[in-house]
Image (tube, rainbow, N blue to C red; front, side, top):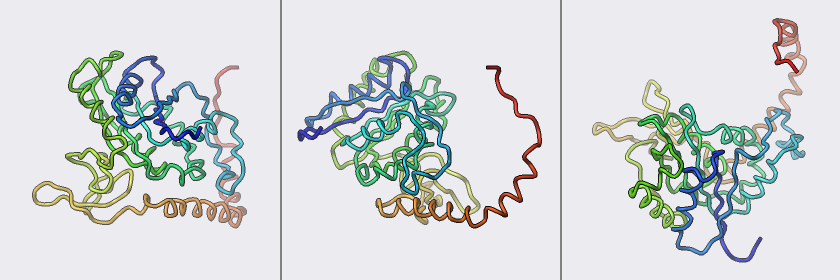
Length: 278
């Protein structure tokens, strides 16, 4: 649909109709000053199969999994901006987010269309302080689609519509709407100095970001000091080097297949596989 009107795609990772994810995303859209259409996809209603690790898509073949992934990628490729919203389930984002991420090899085919497009990420949690790794999961999805994250917010709201019952949250939605197509980003008080992710690995000489893998240390005033970029994110050409590495691994498997089989076959009959009754 190319009629000159921009499209905002809301990816709703919640099964709840008119829950916080849906209503807040719609409130953000209402406050986008630029003319646009809002399209919504409820990720939990899609059939997203598991990656079979066949590497077929990496070498240009059609994915053998027959599901809704092609539909979703088409919607993502044709959108101009994104709102990604998920509830926090057991300290993580809804499983539909991870299901899409696990098929991330297919992102390579649309990366040139998605790279640099703006996104707002929304996490809704119920118990005070129980946010867990949910923001990092949404950031990972955005990062490997090459999106430019304008804001990543965690909002306390459990009951349907509760997020917008709070005037401060309604004001946040209005601010996000105005931010979506603007060049600015919301600043974070902490997090990775490269990408803003708040979940890091502690290493002997400082920290490593769990999304962009940039390394950094903490300065004398408690501020993070940039070290080395992680080398994962960047231009589409840079990110597509990962696909070349994967293609190389497939060739390496062919070269070492005899040795691999000699190593793994002795384990074939160990243990007993348990399956549910049919």
